[in-house]
Image (spheres, rainbow, N blue to C red):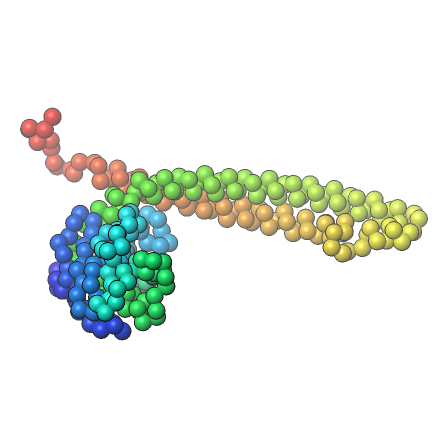
Length: 272
C-alpha cells in the first residue's frame, strides 16, 4: 500500500493530501497546506474503449462530479483565495503503457475560468491523487466496483449508439442510391443536349453543356463524388455500430461473470 499522505509541489505552494478510507468504488483525499477541501478519485473507463475499466478519474470536491454536484461551499479552494473550483482529470495508459492525462475544464463555482497559475495548481493536485490511486494494491477492487456502478448507464448509451449508427448508415446508403440515380439522369440529359447541339448548334445549348456552378455538367460531377462519399461514410457508421455492439457485449459478459457463483462455493445451509 502506498503512503497515506501526499506532498504536492504546486505553483501556489505545497499542498498536503491525506488519504481517507476507501469506499466501495472511490478514495477521498483531504487537502491542506496551499489548498483546502477534498478530491474524489474513482475508477472509470478508458477514453477510447467504453468497456475497458483501466483508468481513474479525479474530481475536485468530495463526490463523483459525474454522478452528483457538490455544493459550492464543499468545493476545494486555495488557502489564500475565496473561490471554490470544479473540474476533473482522467489518468490512463496508452497502447504501450505510458501514462496519459485528459484534463477537463476547470472553473470557479461562479463559472469563471481560473488563472493559469491556479489551473496548474488544481491539475497538479488532481494528478497526484489520481497517480496515488493507480498505484494502490486495491485498485482492481476499485475498478471492478466502478465498472459495476457505470455499466447500466453505459449499456443504455451503447444500445442507443448502435441504433443511431445503424440509422445513419441506412440514411447514407439511401442517399448514395439517390445520388447514383440522379447522376445517371443528369448524364442522360447532358447527352440529349449534346445531340441537340450537334444537330443544330445554338449558344443556349452550348451554355447548357458548359461546366459552371449550378450547371448540368457540374451536377453530374457532384453526383459522381457524392455517391462513393456516402458509401464510405456509411461503412464508417457500420464500423461504429459493430464496435458499440462489441463493447456492450463485453460489459454484459462481465455482468454475467460477476453474478455467477464462484466454482466450488455451495449455497449456505441457512440460505433460502
